[in-house]
Length: 250
Length: 250
DNA sequence: GTACTTAGAGTCACGATGACACGAAGGAGG
DNA sequence: CCTCCTTCGTGTCATCGTGACTCTAAGTAC
Image (cartoon, rainbow over all chains, first blue to last red; front, top):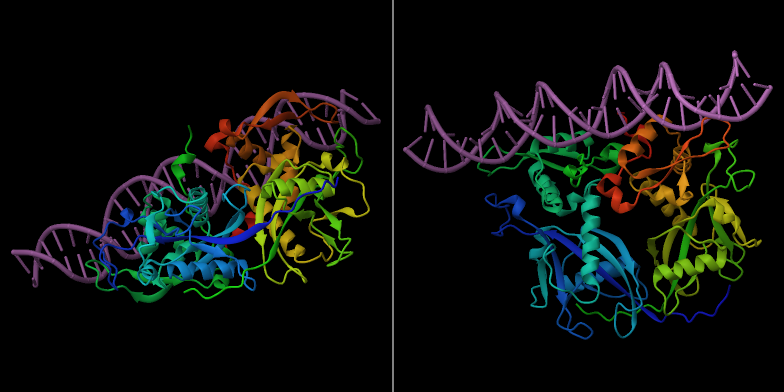
């Protein structure tokens, strides 16, 4: 029962997969409405590795765990240091610890995933070694980071369907069309505006601000904000199926 | 951007929350059918700590990560060494790394959760320092292990609703009543046998073995086995709501 | 045989949701 | 000012999933 096991001398790293919607074409304070919403895709920032192993390759932002900080604190810190963005949503994703995932020494990586608003990305660090990529069209990354991003993408798409994290992509107040566009971008399928409205309104997850967005060339849409989670309560759950047509009969 | 951070000298531990259904009253090779199915509850094995910190307290089975093994391998090994059971299902749960969760040194714990069949628990280690507890009625455990078990319980209940993990509690072939009893035990609510049958059969997640279970005092039920996941495909998904009455209107 | 229990099929009502129609409310251009 | 265009927002209809319930089938116990 008690063989002698040589203990692992592992270093603890923390990395984060950061998601944002691709910012609109022209960048202004007011959203540009001429754009094609469904064409915007998911973006993630990557940093170029300046040292071996994997020098020159793109990798997830991250760093080593500090002595006095929590795992989540380390994720928030390294994320801010390398990319300059502050996440509105940060959650642990998975811990990767296969013995051979880094060539020289053993590294166990606790990976987080984060959602940021596209506006924040404009204030991000301008650096040739930091670049935003389309999450569905990545180059070959360092280590096992391609697998990690794929896993994070699946989690994002799944969780969007049964939680309120879509708000983390948006400003405090937003229109239903903007919220729907977030779902369309992440789920990569169009949603019926009328049915989307009905589902979301029935959930009680949103409250009207009483204001409308002006300056549009058409009928001014009402603005909403996320309801207080306590206020939304049990009712705050609604489901936007990821791919309903896959459930059809064969 | 680059403050100097003192790196953490953390030890990497792996622990596992093991779930099984409480075995039937009389222990025989053939299941005893006189029992009250809904009365059976979820059991988890805990080990008594023989050293400080937390000496004397009950804790999750676990140990240190070995140099050559994967995280999942370490979970399976330490689980087998301490409790003697071999899991049919093993999945990473969460990584806990708050700086103060262990008093003396910093410990980061990668926690897994496992499902085992009750039959396997009878071949488990007989040891006064290993005891099975009702998952909903635990004593005060060492470290933050109470929180960890609570988190694992939530994950089990959620995941049971949209996946096929219930099979991991059962033999290779089983009746629909046995499968339903697993759901009833985990979700802690009775399910309508007719509706349960309809939902599960429509999902294509099960196939009939062509045999029936004999020796019951009543009509012999058909035996089923889990469909090949590839065979079940997309159709293999069905939902058993955790608590449908919570979704009712206020 | 009769009584009893569980297995398994069938029926009904209601709510959720996809598809779609249509009026409402603004700006653009004449 | 008037017409046309676009999106916003409301409403309707059909279908499907699901909870509640009924009824027959098939065995054992007495």
